[in-house]
Each structure stands twice: as structure tokens, then as C-alpha cells.
Image (cartoon, rainbow, N blue to C red; front, side, top):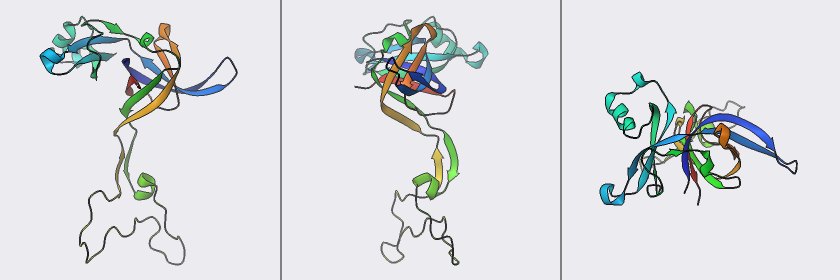
Length: 205
């Protein structure tokens, strides 16, 4: 299993040797410092903690700086644990995009774009009501429960509310190209999150 932290730069297109065009998302992936290794004997599970995103020293407190210093890592903004990686890596090692290869399937996790408070048409793709002849139900959701039975609204009824700004995992994405010298990863299709947002890339399967 390969894993790395990355920053989403945006989308573009690349052309293959056969002339076929591929719409890809460009990720600035790594290099990531291994700042902790979890073992089943000591921690009860196996995982590796990666650090990514250089920041100023004054942005971190003393415990955070001390934790990074144990791995000889510079001040980093993001620390994420990846399960199932503890046996292959050691404290202080560096992970880069060379752990991936073209044609490999990956899954990308990130926080989706926040859309704010939205109604049911945008949030759940409800159909609107008639717009003419004195209709008062153009974009309203309509009835959400009966009055006599069951005399309440069931949990989980789709309604208006906060849209987006949630953790999303996109699976089955293909690595189109790996540029190790530039620390760039080209993934076919779109990935969750806004531009310059941070994502987690893992091998899928």
C-alpha cells in the first residue's frame, strides 16, 4: 500500500502517445516526512504518520515542534496517519511520489467545497413545483410527514441545510503520470476539495 499527502493545484489535460486526451488533476505530492510509526505491540494498531505542508516555526507550539524534531523534520502544518504502512517505513524517512506509478489505481480523500446553507433543489436535486397559476410551491420541499399518523417527522428526511464542507473519498482514480523530479502527480478526473486544498492519496486495492 502506497500513501502520501498532497496539495491540489488544479485541473488540466495531457495527451498520450496515441494522441488521446486525458483530463487530469495535478497534485503537488510530498515529499512527506515520517514523524511517527505505530506498531501493534506498542499502540494496538499499525500505521505511519506523515507530515506535509511547510510552515513557519512560530505557527506551531512547543509540543508540536518537539514531536517533529524527533524525526528531524522541519515545521510542518499537516500530520496524518495512514494505517497498514507501519512495517515498511522508519522514523525520519521521506516519502515522495515515486511510491506511485502510471496506471495505478488510487483513492483520494479531502474536504469538499463548502456551499453554505442550501435548499432541497440544490442540495438533494429535488424537482421544483409549477411556477404559474398562483402556485406557492415553486422551490419549497413540500410535505415531509402526515399529521395524524405517525404525527412526527422521521429521522433522515432530506431537507435544506449545510451543503458541502464534508470529508469525501473518491475511489478508483487512475494515475496518468508521475513526475518525481517536480513532485507532481497527475490523476485522471477530479478530486474532492478546492484549489490549494490538501488531500490524502492512497493506493486503491
